[in-house]
Length: 125
Image (cartoon, rainbow, N blue to C red):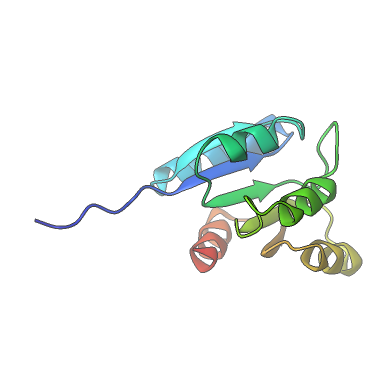
Protein backbone atom coordinates (compact mmCIF):
# COMPACT_ATOMS: atom_id res chain seq x y z
CA UNK A 1 0.00 0.00 0.00
CA UNK A 2 1.44 3.39 -1.02
CA UNK A 3 1.56 6.17 1.58
CA UNK A 4 -0.91 8.97 1.04
CA UNK A 5 0.60 12.32 0.30
CA UNK A 6 -0.73 15.27 2.19
CA UNK A 7 -2.74 17.67 0.03
CA UNK A 8 -1.12 21.06 -0.43
CA UNK A 9 -3.11 24.14 0.55
CA UNK A 10 -2.88 27.40 -1.37
CA UNK A 11 -4.51 30.78 -0.86
CA UNK A 12 -4.92 32.96 -3.94
CA UNK A 13 -5.41 36.71 -3.45
CA UNK A 14 -6.34 38.17 -6.83
CA UNK A 15 -8.85 40.91 -7.63
CA UNK A 16 -9.33 40.04 -11.30
CA UNK A 17 -12.16 37.48 -11.36
CA UNK A 18 -11.03 35.83 -14.62
CA UNK A 19 -7.46 35.33 -13.40
CA UNK A 20 -8.72 34.22 -9.98
CA UNK A 21 -10.92 31.56 -11.59
CA UNK A 22 -8.13 30.44 -13.93
CA UNK A 23 -5.74 30.05 -10.98
CA UNK A 24 -8.32 28.24 -8.89
CA UNK A 25 -9.17 25.73 -11.62
CA UNK A 26 -5.57 25.10 -12.64
CA UNK A 27 -4.28 24.69 -9.09
CA UNK A 28 -7.12 22.28 -8.27
CA UNK A 29 -6.24 20.29 -11.37
CA UNK A 30 -2.70 20.06 -9.99
CA UNK A 31 -4.11 18.56 -6.79
CA UNK A 32 -4.05 21.59 -4.51
CA UNK A 33 -6.72 22.58 -2.01
CA UNK A 34 -7.47 26.13 -3.16
CA UNK A 35 -9.04 29.04 -1.28
CA UNK A 36 -9.50 32.37 -3.07
CA UNK A 37 -10.09 35.98 -2.06
CA UNK A 38 -10.57 39.14 -4.10
CA UNK A 39 -9.27 41.73 -1.63
CA UNK A 40 -6.56 42.30 0.94
CA UNK A 41 -8.61 42.35 4.14
CA UNK A 42 -9.69 38.72 3.66
CA UNK A 43 -6.22 37.29 3.05
CA UNK A 44 -4.79 37.15 6.57
CA UNK A 45 -7.84 35.51 8.22
CA UNK A 46 -7.87 32.86 5.49
CA UNK A 47 -4.13 32.18 5.74
CA UNK A 48 -4.28 32.00 9.55
CA UNK A 49 -7.46 29.88 9.75
CA UNK A 50 -5.98 26.78 8.11
CA UNK A 51 -2.62 25.45 7.09
CA UNK A 52 -1.29 27.32 4.07
CA UNK A 53 1.54 25.83 2.02
CA UNK A 54 1.62 28.66 -0.53
CA UNK A 55 0.19 32.14 -0.92
CA UNK A 56 -0.26 33.55 -4.43
CA UNK A 57 -0.50 37.29 -3.93
CA UNK A 58 -1.37 40.04 -6.41
CA UNK A 59 0.41 43.34 -5.83
CA UNK A 60 -2.63 45.50 -6.55
CA UNK A 61 -5.64 44.52 -4.49
CA UNK A 62 -8.57 46.94 -4.14
CA UNK A 63 -8.22 47.75 -0.44
CA UNK A 64 -4.52 47.34 0.30
CA UNK A 65 -1.38 46.49 -1.59
CA UNK A 66 0.10 43.05 -1.82
CA UNK A 67 3.36 44.65 -0.68
CA UNK A 68 1.72 45.72 2.61
CA UNK A 69 0.40 42.20 3.09
CA UNK A 70 3.79 40.75 2.27
CA UNK A 71 5.39 42.92 4.95
CA UNK A 72 2.80 41.83 7.51
CA UNK A 73 3.19 38.13 6.69
CA UNK A 74 6.98 38.29 6.93
CA UNK A 75 6.79 40.05 10.33
CA UNK A 76 4.32 37.53 11.79
CA UNK A 77 6.00 34.37 13.18
CA UNK A 78 2.93 32.32 12.18
CA UNK A 79 3.34 33.18 8.49
CA UNK A 80 7.01 34.09 8.22
CA UNK A 81 7.92 30.82 6.46
CA UNK A 82 4.93 30.49 4.12
CA UNK A 83 6.19 30.68 0.52
CA UNK A 84 4.70 33.70 -1.25
CA UNK A 85 4.47 34.00 -5.01
CA UNK A 86 3.86 37.60 -6.09
CA UNK A 87 1.81 37.38 -9.28
CA UNK A 88 1.42 40.83 -10.74
CA UNK A 89 1.22 43.04 -13.81
CA UNK A 90 4.07 45.15 -12.38
CA UNK A 91 6.83 43.96 -14.69
CA UNK A 92 9.43 46.68 -14.13
CA UNK A 93 12.72 45.56 -12.60
CA UNK A 94 12.35 47.95 -9.63
CA UNK A 95 9.02 46.35 -8.66
CA UNK A 96 10.51 42.86 -8.88
CA UNK A 97 13.45 43.92 -6.69
CA UNK A 98 11.07 45.52 -4.21
CA UNK A 99 8.83 42.44 -4.01
CA UNK A 100 11.73 40.05 -3.53
CA UNK A 101 13.40 42.48 -1.14
CA UNK A 102 10.26 42.57 0.99
CA UNK A 103 10.32 38.80 1.26
CA UNK A 104 8.44 37.34 -1.69
CA UNK A 105 9.74 33.85 -2.38
CA UNK A 106 9.16 34.25 -6.12
CA UNK A 107 7.93 36.96 -8.47
CA UNK A 108 5.97 36.30 -11.65
CA UNK A 109 4.48 38.82 -14.04
CA UNK A 110 1.21 38.77 -15.95
CA UNK A 111 0.56 37.58 -18.53
CA UNK A 112 1.85 34.14 -17.67
CA UNK A 113 1.42 30.64 -19.04
CA UNK A 114 -0.05 27.82 -16.98
CA UNK A 115 3.08 25.75 -17.53
CA UNK A 116 5.22 28.64 -16.25
CA UNK A 117 2.98 28.91 -13.19
CA UNK A 118 3.14 25.17 -12.51
CA UNK A 119 6.93 25.17 -12.89
CA UNK A 120 7.34 28.10 -10.49
CA UNK A 121 5.04 26.52 -7.91
CA UNK A 122 6.90 23.23 -8.20
CA UNK A 123 10.14 25.05 -7.45
CA UNK A 124 8.57 26.68 -4.38
CA UNK A 125 7.45 23.41 -2.85
